[in-house]
Amino acid sequence: MEKSKLRVGNQDEVKSIQSALQILNDAAKESSNEIKLMMDRDYNKLKGVLTDLKPEVKHAFKEFGEASQEQLKQAHETVKESVHEHPWIYIGGATVISGLLGYILGRKS
Image (tube, rainbow, N blue to C red; front, side, top):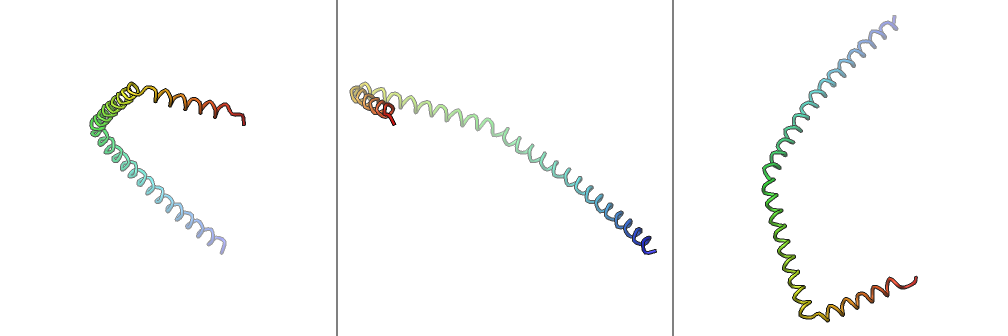
């Protein structure tokens, strides 16, 4: 008789556990859907913000490129003028650097 009580008790526990698991599973599905919806909303908001910022960012990069190009032109002109004014300094510097490089690379270890 005790065995039959145990079996009935175990079956009730199993049914109780199964129903608890089903409730948890349903809640997890609902939470999963809510999380997906939140992620979709956040993604769409971010996409909208980035789309709105695209022209501004494009313009900023264009300005940066133009400013960089102007600075490079100025540096080129400065170096060009300096070389034309003092060519022997640059020829001597290139010779010294070439000699040092040849000495360092030509040494046997």
